[in-house]
Length: 173
Image 1: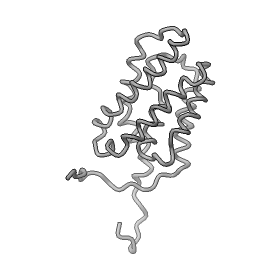
Image 2: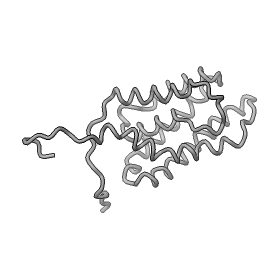
Image 3: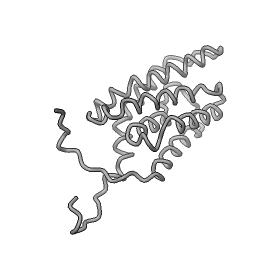
């Protein structure tokens, strides 16, 4: 029998507005004129995977598809390039979400690294199939940076759920 770690604490329910705000902020980060470099981590993909793992009923494949289309329009990419990558990313994140939560943050980062690499390969394959240019070897660094940012995202995005509940004499928890 698999036992959970003793340092895990019960989390409060997530506020749907916080999910929407975090996804909107991740999308807004891509709207900044940073000179989109291939090695920059895709915070939209990271946030989508995080919420797919932690709240698969609220953030699903359809929302990932819509954000992917928005990314395609914003970047002027082939319509469907990011949408396909985000859809596959969300599907596989939802597929492994039960198993992934049994591990610590570093092990989770190792489990999501292949997902981020798959999304990068799919996006690159679509780009190259239509005659796009090779973006450079920074494409390899982006999934690694996203996996390294996984523990940071977990701490930041779960912080509102970790606040202490209101003390009540009638409630046992």
